[in-house]
Image 1: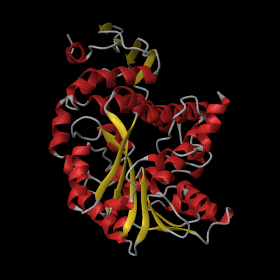
Image 2: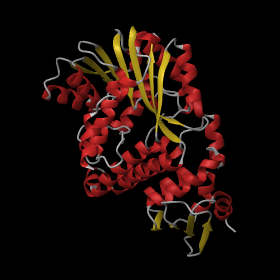
Image 3: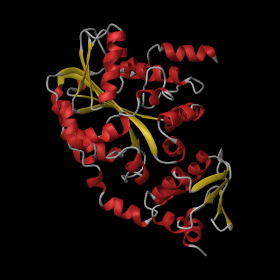
Image 4: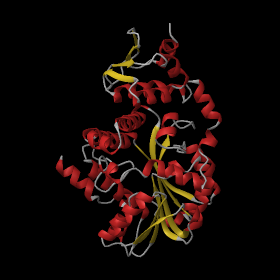
Length: 410
């Protein structure tokens, strides 16, 4: 019996997986039924895979799929990754020898001084401008959408997310707002347009900076929205409001104290800050090795037990903490993956087939992690003075045009 067979007999307790080896032999591994996941059959075209997969499952499988050495014969790539994720969860992130080594070096993997942060951001966000247009919404928001009405379109859900964040920030005309990790500027422009505030958006991506500035000028908001290529650790001044969406995953545990101390130093005494980030409902672990190598070098999604101690030491008061259902991001990724796959030929023209298989693996694996793993999204509201926010949450639940429109369309 092969090394891989022994591994899979221990690993598979949910779902049905058939493995066809390069010599034509096939083996079935079956556990309890996994709702909404079809039985899968994979074919290994490389005789080395039965040995390399048990040593580093995610990295070996991801690279083999990218290179065509592993193909899906029955079911879909998503079904296969959902099955793998559902079974991996009970191991707490440690299922192979490489996971042990990753745990021992996890702090080093997340060491993100300014120079490393710039390189890591460029690796992912400085892809072709046309590429992200293939699958993002019209406002180019590359973070979890908000689906209070499940049948919302992606654009409606992203508009609802912006509205939800704006409500939590309690913006007033004339306030100064800092957007840390502003992306292509969608939230910054929405805040300026809807609340008559002035916004400074900062990013480490030259491509994002260029597009964000173009958008501000085209919208006639460049007098109130300014975008800069700068690290959060290097900015001065003070702000009435600070928001950061989808950037905290690039900070790294060793830098959390620096991050929250900086936020406190930049925030006025009556100010409010909001952090929107991917986290884990389970215990601290490591970043998936394939994701770390190919998608988000230096990235990490923390458990709240790693985040809250850093806020306490910064003199920030956590005034509200909302855990969004993982289904919000799972549905966001489902939309992104459907759009990407429907425009595969355009992505392949920009890059190549290997890149497209890599990106599909990333989107499908991320969706599976939110549906069957321990990933979630949290929104943490903070203030230097707890009296800066009302005593109830009613102000967060006001009239919401994107939600009302989606409900009316049902």
